[in-house]
Image (cartoon, rainbow, N blue to C red):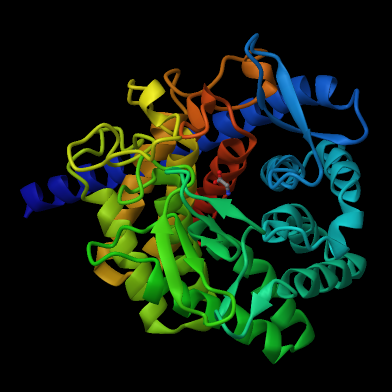
Amino acid sequence: MKYRFAVLLLLLVSVSFIRYDDRQFLQENFAFAQAQTWNMLSEANKTDTLFPRTTDDKGQLKLSNKYEWTSGFFPGTLWYIYQATGSDSIRRQALAWTAKLESLKTFTQHHDLGFMMYCSYGNAYRLTKDESYKSLLIQSAHSLSTRFSEKTGSIRSWNKFGSWDGKNKYDYPVIIDNMMNLELLFFAANASNDLRLRKIAVTHAENVMKNQLRADGSCYHVVCYDEQTGKVLARETAQGYANNSTWSRGQAWGIYGFTMTYRETRDKKFLNTAIKMADYYVNHPDLPSDKVCYWDFNANQNGYTPGARSKAPMTPANYRDVSAAAITASALLELSTFAGERGKVYKDVAVKILHALGSDVYRASLGGNGGFLLKHSVGSIAHGSEIDVPLVYADYYYVEALNRYKNLLDGKKLN
Ligand code: GLY
């Protein structure tokens, strides 16, 4: 009896130590994120029109314009740091950086409006409940919906896509990343009781399930449709190693996108798809022990050949992609709350990724790394750009995941 009691006590003490350690870990990471973001702001606030994206060859901050798909991530990161710290000065920065994107509400030139507006204004609305943000998000969702066609049952990602083999050009490419843009549509559908926006999001997700997924739970990056007939013309890659390979960030977008789509629909087919995609990641034999994936699950392997014009063969080193790992960590934390007994595996992998990213291996030192939080991401090896650099979206999903983990520990709603 005494022995059993002692074992139980030991167990309880060790569980509370783990919790205590993780709370300290979160505290320390939020404090670091806040301090490092002031370093970023001291540079980034020198411009009114550009947004942090990555670093240049000299390790200095590199910015891009608001029409780039990445413009919403820095405002969103500020909102997550405000959520974690309650800092009023960070809140003022978040307000100012978000406001710079207002004119995008009518933007229709590519599908990334979801990232641009939901990561910025979506978080702004969630944390302030300012009604003007809500109407702006609804208007943005209508702009995004203009890219949907009934024929393809999909939102057109880009206006053009050329194969890496140089032989074909397509007018209706849909990329797996597009799953992320559905969150803006679901938000606006709920906020304005608009069944049409909801139907568009669900139909798009169903067609991704049908046309973009492979039997093993991995996905193609790009599916090209015939705009007139809705037929699938090709399945290829833009940023992955080869057409038949699994680009890690694409896999991460899929895990996150289908988990979010299940949250919004409660339709089990989307949950099963998220689980299948997550299992591909967590069970992959080439996933390193710190669970931070390589940039493509099949780079340099037999049976995978880049198209003739791809620059992938010029980068034989196999880099990790911290951005893919951060997105996956955030997605797995949410998936863990839906997946019953399997949820523990997803949560453990997510927490392992967060601890790895918070270590010296991946996290910047204060004042370095152009003001970004994390190192070692990959933009596009196929294009020969942004290789082993900080990326603003890695930071965004990292602080999102840290906030989600804190909410999980506190027994609160995740988002
Ligand atoms: N959505 C573009 C990317 O993941 O690089």
